[in-house]
Image (tube, rainbow, N blue to C red; front, side):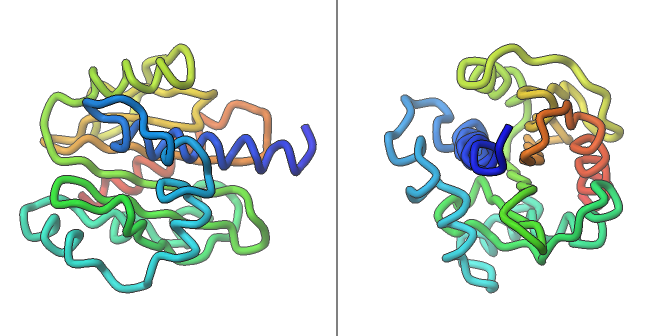
Length: 195
């Protein structure tokens, strides 16, 4: 797989991850959520997101929803993946009182990309899994310490899981065509430990 094809695939999968985590929850897909250059697209969203927390994320934190950028550091992600990363950036276009998203970009290139999405509400893993399978194909159960109902899609590129009353989605998008489940699980477990 060429680096360009890998980058395009990763951007598309991240757009789907944003959709699975929320753009498409309980409604039909919105066209602007499908392309990576739209408001749900990770690359534009990450590039345009400010380093400060938007009011909606502050409101979400006040209601008990974890702030996703506080769940991982660049050092954490490097320890789990072996790749250097920059600081996490809140995706303001994806923020609401019941959800928030953070993206970390590789320090030396466009890939890999890590994303954590948190969504308030118990028992969402089943419906989120069905949505993920609709967009990305079959899923498999995985073990993630501290989580229940954990599953992976896309060879471990996206993990979804229930952590108490919060649905958490962790994505690790890379140009590597190998299964990345172990890396994504390691990143997820570091994030969950801070919840």
